[in-house]
Amino acid sequence: MGIIDNRYDFVFFFDVEFGNPNGDPDAGNMPRIDPETGFGLVTDVCLKRKVRNYVELRKGGQEGFNIYVREKAVLNDQHRMAYTACDLEPQSRKPPKCGDDSRRLTEWMCANFYDVRSFGAVMTTEVNCGQVRGPVQFTFARSVDAIVPQEVKIIRMAVTTSKEADVQHGENRTMGSKYVVPYALYRMEGFVSAALAAQTGFSEEDVALLWESLLNMFEHDRSAARGKMAARKLFIFRHDNKLGNAHAHVLFNTITVESVGGAEAVPARSYADYRLHIKKDLPGSVTLLEKL
Image 1 (cartoon, rainbow, N blue to C red):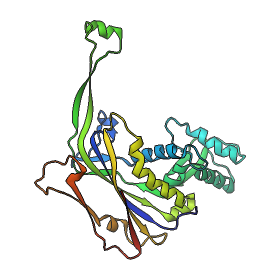
Image 2: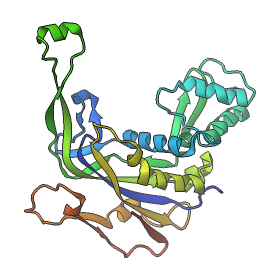
Image 3: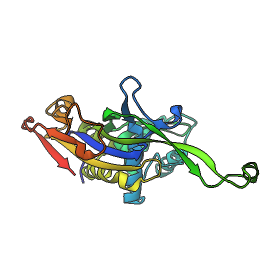
Image 4: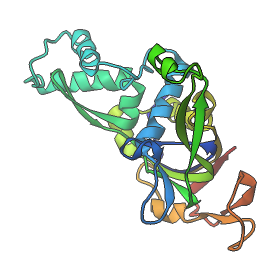
């Protein structure tokens, strides 16, 4: 498939039930939160990780769909693959002196790694492959309402060492804790630049895979920590040209969320406690696509 010719903006809703959608390592892995407002946060990096994992699972290393930032990957090794393919010899931290050679390396990385041509990458490490500005960008996801994370105490019916067992006289129990959000609906906004796609080779097949990843990534990311997470709605604004026909924030403002019970409602505990509203009076050259 060819390079995309249309700009896209999108709004993605997902929720969590009795789970931790994105722990903050600076706060004991408590769910991320805006300390001034109490709204829950999920970073763009966290969501991109899930997209990468889904693409790796879905495509299974097919040509052109390798993942650059794989879990436990050694990035310099990824860069050396490009030098080998281009029949070049890396120099410490320096790109090739010939501009054409530098472009060949960057183009090879874009052609072979889905996440490089999607999200971009800074590859100016010891084995230098330059840097790429990606056409796909996510914002932080923010909860629709403020959240109140709960710390839940748990007991493990075992101990780690024999010494601990001796101290407990055979009781063999270990106390622990985990954080959960009882329920929260999150909203993430994103952008796909057709102008930047032309520089990385981001194609129609790639953008279709992006939508598929957003809709399915939580289905293959289960863990005890994350509880029950689900994609709820994906709204895609498709412009009829590369530069777009309307400002992204204007389009985003056409999608609003309200509590079914109004201002006096009890805290939401399910997706059914919210109602999404979509204004249909969009510019004629922008098409709204709904998924889920």
